[in-house]
Image 1: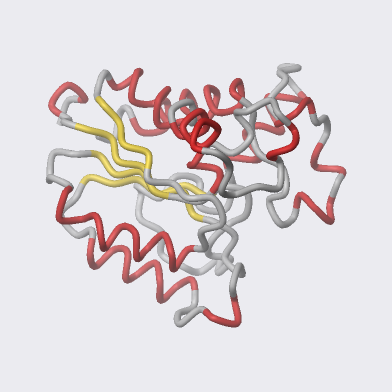
Image 2: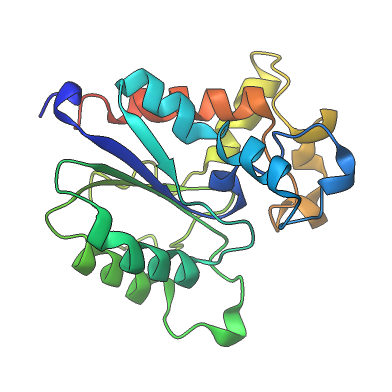
Length: 208
């Protein structure tokens, strides 16, 4: 399937999909439900925009700040009636232990549920800032991109090696801030989301 045969890009995830960090007003750093203006600024400038541009297709950003993986699953399930088989679905997984006390499924069980409802759809999975499935013996499909790595690792590389400014509000060297970064406290800035879009494109362009 050539990329020009795709109809739309549909993206699901948490704040790393919703675009938290695009805004420059630090007052919204801890705010998952900011004013509509900031919400739209995030949503319309996150990685789906840049990936959609590279694929030359329209995009729909269904990321929601604060979502755990079971919330992401429910969002996919609720919106699947609007998604066509020639659309491209991108899912960016959140921290696997978020809301752990309320989760119904293990990461492995939940992933299989994603696979069941998305059977026959064009899709790719990515990890946001922490690997979703930590089981080394798990049989990952080839459309789960770098399942032991994360998008945050890619941004760390861009900062350390290519000297790019990639983190929200001018943050630097976030991998040293273990306590907060472990929970995904930091997010990309506009440049970071552009780089994520470019990274995704390179990873999937020959697999679509």
